[in-house]
Amino acid sequence: MKQVFFVLALLLLCQSTSANELLLSAGGGPQPDSDQRNRTYGIDYSFKKFEKSHRQHIHLGVSYTKVKTDTDEHRSFYAISIYPQLNLYPRRQSWGQPYFFVRALGPSYISSNQLGDRHQDNHFAFQAQVGYAARIDWQGREDLVLMVSWKHFSNANIFSDNDGIDMPFVVNVGLNF
Image 1 (cartoon, helix red, strand yellow):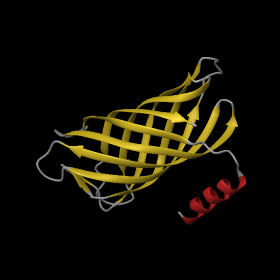
Image 2: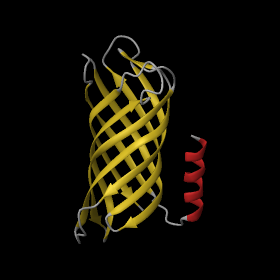
Image 3: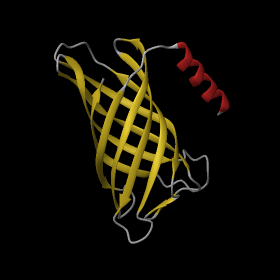
Image 4: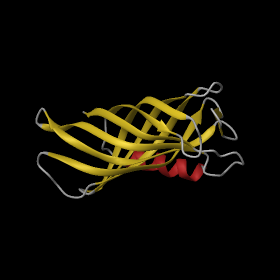
């Protein structure tokens, strides 16, 4: 794990492109393999962007996520995450740019290791998110960002209790400045 953080720190020092993308999120839906329904809201800030090509961008960012459920006990937690995000663009466009994105293995601190009937072994988890997005021209640039996705927290079976926590439908809206 230390090597991963060292490599990321080295990449940050060697690159000069900042992302400066701020997103607000909200969503939720039924938890798979459970009777509970989860809701979420949060804020994401991408602070670094690496352009591998005009079709591939990698973003680094931080995220605050609040998750609530409709059960009687263990009704909420918050998560603070660091995430890598891969954006894959199908082609260039002049009006705006659609793309597919994936966040994987974003180390996260979760404030509670239980949400409703879902259990995590401890307060360490990973954030994963996958979805479709678009950068929309606003004020002459691709400033407006709209995303629709599935968001997931789990410990990737590193620890024994690993009931994933899911929000099947999340909408992010934000600005790229």
